[in-house]
Amino acid sequence: MDIQWYPGHMTKTRRQIQADLKLVDLVVEVVDARIPRSSRNPDIDALVGEKPRIIMLNRADQADPQMNRAWVQHFNKSQGIPAAAVDARSGDGVGQMAALARNALKEQMAKWREKGQVGRPIRAMVVGVPNVGKSTFINKVAGRKSAKAGDRPGVTRGKQWVGAGSGLDLLDTPGILWPKFEDPKTGLHLAFTGAVKDEVMDAETLACGLAELLDRRYPQALVERYKVPPEAGEPGYVRLEQCARKRGFLISGGEVDTERMAKILLDEFRGGKLGRFTLESPGGEGEHGCE
Image 1 (tube, rainbow, N blue to C red):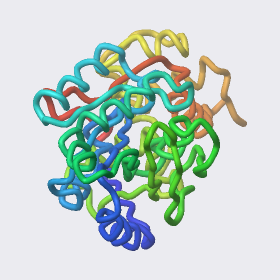
Image 2: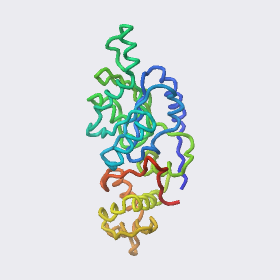
Image 3: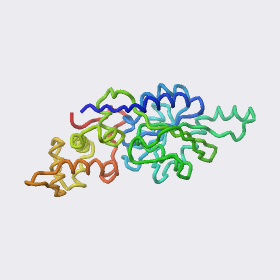
């Protein structure tokens, strides 16, 4: 399943981000801690260039704690980009952003002081793929609901400046993908987490891919949540049927309602009800489900 989704407004968003970069001192890149590689837009590297940057791994509360530490270390050490794991909904770890920003800009801030620009706020642009939690993150940093937030991609439209206190002004931006996913795994991982709208794919095919991936990386996930037997290597559709039967999802003639089960599996994974999972490792290229 090769997923490609690039609505027309994202071209406009890319141009807007490029134009607004001259207004900011720092870029805050929000990624999904469950898929830290797939949720990083490669276009951001080209757009940002040499401008200082920090990475916030959001939804860390839904990701594997050990992998959160591994990814933070990977970005800090291997990529040379300051990073922190955060949960924007509860606010856990969000306070680290201001310290990371000041540290990343300490030389620039010293120059501001020399010029008498004492108290000048740090202007930071917040970027990321759709549905990664940028607006929720900004609202938590600001301590009030200023940026529009939602649980689906495409909620933020247009430019929004938010005064966040602590000497920070944040620029919220709409979520932006890139025109073509070179690796099909990237599209799958973004679809699993809801960064790609569900309308552009078949939910059952997607759910069977997720079932296979969970069976490989976290073999107990489906066993514990849906009380199905541990069966390594079973096709995702078989696992989907097993879960549906356990939930009693039957339609006329005793047929299993895999469509209903698919939606529930995706919803419960995205909502953290299955457990805490990270689908990619810093040292590898990640894994994927159904071909």
